[in-house]
Length: 295
Image (cartoon, rainbow, N blue to C red):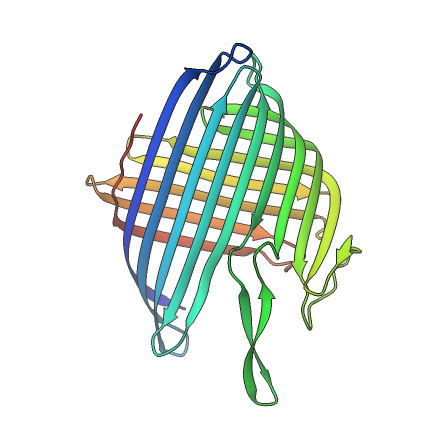
């Protein structure tokens, strides 16, 4: 059984801006909404493991979230970019990368009188920095490269049925989806079960065709003090554990006493290329925040 103490300080800033303006004679009205949110946080963790030894470390996290939506006569275009980068510092030890990811969602949605319409979507996600794994060879310690920018990476492009249920939220069902995946290639790396389209010295590039879906909830106000964010997606091209992939990311934010904030974040990933086990992260964070809005 593990027990831990987490002390965190958070600084968050955000802003929104929206307007409608005349564009051209063929496209007379363009409505724009944009929002940017960013945070820096640090945590000190004291953890006692099963052997009653203490593990103490600092975690430094930064993230940014940019959303832009442009509505014109024929299409509504949405761009959503999220980043997450953090490091952990073990006392009397080295720095290690704790989190490193970025994700880009692009959606072109046909304007229609009903809330159900057609759309085209693109999802691209990867990491920023190189990843190294410690290895021991003949008593000597070294680091082996395990990944870098756009390797690993995943790109999904799909033609969707789109359902809009809130102003900045929707659900997509991709009836025709193409998925491109890049996986690192290094000494000892497992060969993919599917034949790669391209193989280089450092990567396997795989391609598949199937069914996809995604849900996007952006800063939905449940109450004056509570907001909800969700970015989730799945892809499948068969009924087996090797042909299903999903990524679920959910966050609730509770604001209280004017400048305090409590966040509950859950991230669950299933990627059979990496592992048949679920990968998950659960975080509880409380801290001081600053917010600036402009309409």
